Length: 462
Image (cartoon, rainbow, N blue to C red):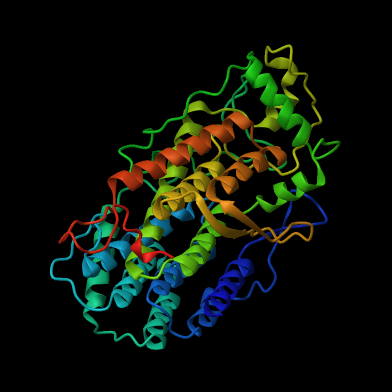
């Protein structure tokens, strides 16, 4: 019952602060109701939930972190960078006390106290650093959280959390994210195959700096650079061209009603939905705060590195979106790709190049991280969309993590905003990123040989 109540509160927090598609006009946005609500008013509902098992502290502060990125209106998927910082600090704070897994970055000698207090303080301090305009709300949230959960402000764990946060803040201080002076607007080019701004907004590339941000676990942003898209004159290009042209069109599409619903379901805020799914899965299957901290850190840092990887490939290849490709189909040198100058996609293309898909990179990284954490691709779980349109099924349930990953590949084609090769390349990248993070970071410590852990530390899961 407690987890169900907590889930409903998380939904309320996120839904109130996410614009939703206007069901009367596809591809447009409608401002959320109750715009005068503030993050602290919503979070007060969260804080009213009775104190619960320790693992919930990680999930609670993950929800607070997600809300902070929404309140700050982080562009596109970039809020995952902030959330990854929070989860890294929370992980190092908790593990400094539990001493079950390798630290990600910060070592706190002689750490003691409540891991819950350490986690809350670590998350709070990172969020205040990232969102100084929200400092007063975050301070009050932190104070009330300690009070409601019976945690003392002078608990030794508070110092541990502050130390972990300070270390992560210093580590990421010059990572290239959210530059004070943004780069000049990037508008691509007009040659065949080259991305350019797309209708209706015709906006320059969003967050062009993202592909050069220092990764959390990778050695460099280009470590898993995608293979190039197929040549415009190739049969593979023509095949994927016709697929998205046929099933991704706004009008006269070959999509089935089920495929249209799938497209609308996954027309969502991926940072929000995957962190919500993490909280639900952790609430159902993770009992220990150390395991929970590790799961969130692994998944969110993998998602952050995956979106950096995606943008690095976008910047490298600058490949056009289907709407441009189809309207220019008669000019691409391929006799198999008849153009349609009036073609429209079901969903408006976001303002950045196609290859590779950011949504598929993030999704594959999150889902692969979950499979690695639990040691199996098989796990029953649900995903709830942020798209509140009335024709969309709000929640979908899966038996395998890989099933959801495949749906995202297909959905972005049904939406008309990606070629299949861009989706599949992104899914491969996301898996590579998660595999790398799992192999090289936050590994179980071999303390005394009889701690009951297997090689992946799976004893805290059910």
